[in-house]
Image (cartoon, rainbow, N blue to C red; front, side, top):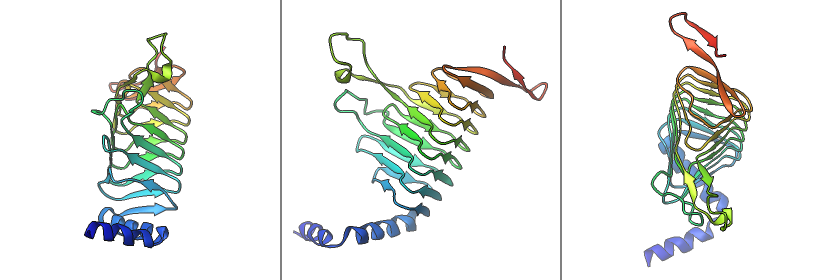
Length: 219
């Protein structure tokens, strides 16, 4: 009866007031600053200070979770989501996204975490970057692709990376620490530590030589 009364009374409170009270309670615990309107659900955890800009959507269903580290910036209209894909046979075990401390998620970034996404510390994303950890199956030529099971594989990005404008990182790719991914690149294979990769498909074009203390071109 008490629960019913609470639900009934909450419906009588204007949505704007409910949102304001939720955010006041939320901000007091996480020290997160919202600039404009954004959508965040209960399965998102902020571990410290953060700034979330207008239009950002950060959502996970009951099979998934999103963890955001300290001093993270989420750019305007960024979309970060993870959920079990019921229709296409998604994997509920890896529906997790983790973003490390001091990372910056650019405006209009789109992260799809059905296969899992792990982002290290101090990672910079330019605008319009896409991380897609799931992919449609197509092996059965007699069944429509939309009805076949997804293939979900985790994306990993190491500490101190710079992901350029309009880059796309596909399912199962691991990028090492202190790497640069060139603008417009499509990354389909792993990139080792201390490398620069660019192109479609992306190829390693530079590596850091610790003996010479310089970046060297890769032929």
